[in-house]
Image 1 (cartoon, rainbow, N blue to C red):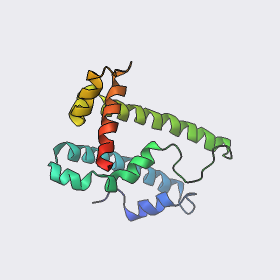
Image 2: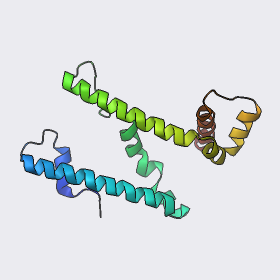
Image 3: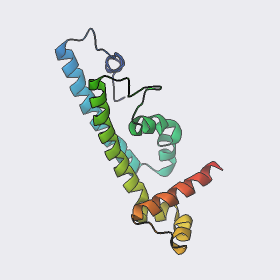
Image 4: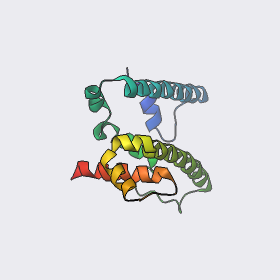
Length: 155
């Protein structure tokens, strides 16, 4: 069962929400939040418990790429100009900036955690640490190791 019903998708795609009563908007918004939170919880369980061969089919660049880009980019719409935005748009953009920044911080902390980085990129971490390439923030060393190791997947 998908997270969103077809009517919910239609509602989300309607930018100005014309043709919807206040009650309908409220019901859709409440359901969208509830269904999404439950869906994310289910995805977390799958990420923890699915065997690796099944995770590889579910959690990969093809299936998650758009989600990752949509979550972590400040401006999702192409060619969006902040300077030309209304004050309301700028306020919303500032709220989004703070939310996205907090998500980025959390994700980077998790990825660059020294224990995690040593498991993801053991050889690179070993080289960085033996070379004395420590950072003031240990997470940065871990991020470097994971990034360098990740580059090798694309060579």
